[in-house]
Image (cartoon, rainbow, N blue to C red):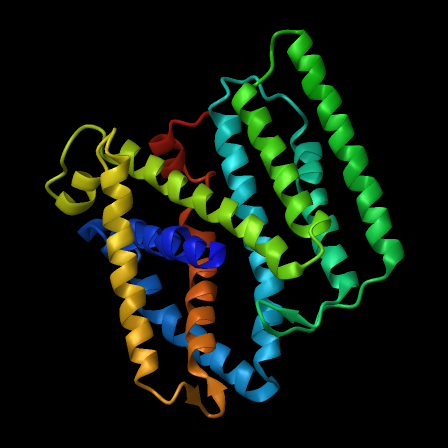
Amino acid sequence: MILIADLWLLGYHHVIATYTRLAFDRNSAREHRFFLFGPPVIVFSVTFLLAWTFGLWIITTIYLYWQWFHYTRQSWGISQAYRGRSGGLVTDNPLFARLSFYLVPLWGILYRSWQAPDTFLFVELQVIPVTELLVDLAGLCAAASVLFWGYSQFRAWQKGQLAVAHTYYMLSHYIIFLVGYRLIEDITFGWLVINVWHNAQYVLFVWLFNVNRYKQGIDNKAVFLSTISQPGNFLRYFFVCLALSTLVYGLIAVIISHQTLMLADLPLAAVIYQTINFHHYIVDSRIWKVRKKTMQETLRLKTR
């Protein structure tokens, strides 16, 4: 039930939210037309060929590691947005900040690789071989870096210079990756915890971006998107996107159900849904870079 609620209320909406950036207004569609037409065909073809050649396990394995990287990168980008909105209070060394940020997720994925479960999301899985010693070393480094980070935040608090929002966000990052990848033994249940967090995070971030774009009022060049993205109308925005995602994924389900559910001895649904995921990862890696000037201006960030 939790998985269904996550997919319907957040996961599918998460994907549709990407298209509010790609295609909900004429200028965005023109700017990102390559991502709308070229990559989907390529990604589907590669995904299908890999699954057909090696079996479904290979796209499940690719998904395990790619979603881990994607979730971590998105979290890093949002942490940088909090840094940019901190008014200069976040003064830790950028190299150490990045190292500390990535060590906990790295420990988590190394643990899952060492754990070597037979299935992930109810599909056969194979993992990269990892030794227990490497997992333990990564865990020690992660613990040391988080403790040092915590000490630096305590010192900033003593001086009255704590960036509260950024600190709370970093805590959520460490806790979610620790719980999702290390403390919950079942890989699918652990993934579900972090997937709910990731999806909700993305939906809210895109909402904030769109509100900042259209806070001055309705834009005649983007009437639909600017209308649903007015400040204070989050519920309208959410339910419009939810209706659209329900329609799109409902149509996909109907199309799949009218097939034999197999294509060249492969479950068509698995190939299609993973194609959507992989295409989404590629697109997100290009359109949401916080270091871009347009992103910084829209989100009112000050970066150093």
